[in-house]
Length: 326
Image 1 (spheres, rainbow, N blue to C red):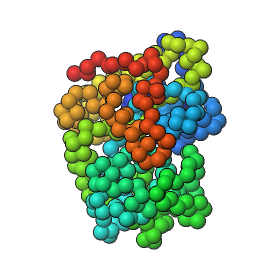
Image 2: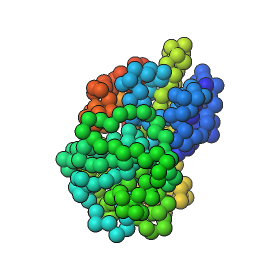
Image 3: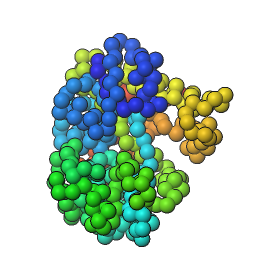
Image 4: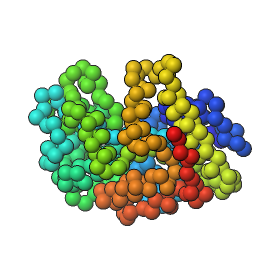
């Protein structure tokens, strides 16, 4: 069985072969977020993969049922920090983005869906109130993962080979760029994050909404599960065990497992904020955040109708619940 994942502490034990999936001869490939869609749906080189939640949901809504997900979520991230502006920009709040010109590498990417959800739910700014430009971030090229028409009432300009998003931000032809990957100009000091204290904004938003955004899930070929009905549960258990081992390392206080000076204290702080397990797997523990996401996809015109959360995941995994991690 060929599994593709991005490398993180949540997948490390699977990548290193420390966590096995009983009954499966697992070959794990480390890849990038840009490659995951191509590996799975275009090249069809893999049997299971970490996958963009938006990409997967949009494919399901279009009747493309090659894969079914298991409720493991290796990538989660708040996205208030993903908006960038010129260092001398007058913009410093999300509320100022009404009427703004915003560039994005992929309009339908998960991070952008979540940012638009925050803009609409918190500030009343609909996607149609922003002028969107889609293009390559640093290079004047862009290949969108999924082809789609601009939703009704939304203005989207596609750059093609004309320029990069960063070119337009530098020239003043864009007010902001929304990107999961920090542009090189951030290190050079010529741009900054839109929000000067994104961490504070993200924490306050979580305290209001209770939502910790999911970026990726894990998908498995349906034909493989039809032939091996046990596989979904075993693979989900493997991802959960890999994550549990990562959290054990974070609790280490004899030495620092990561190069973050206060990572032990940060871990204690975030556990207090989230009330225990801050990164749960399973549908039951994530019903609220998954429900918000499928509603956002429909509201933003990326799916024709609101998907059912249950239809996204292998039936045998719907009741999965992790043991409480003290």
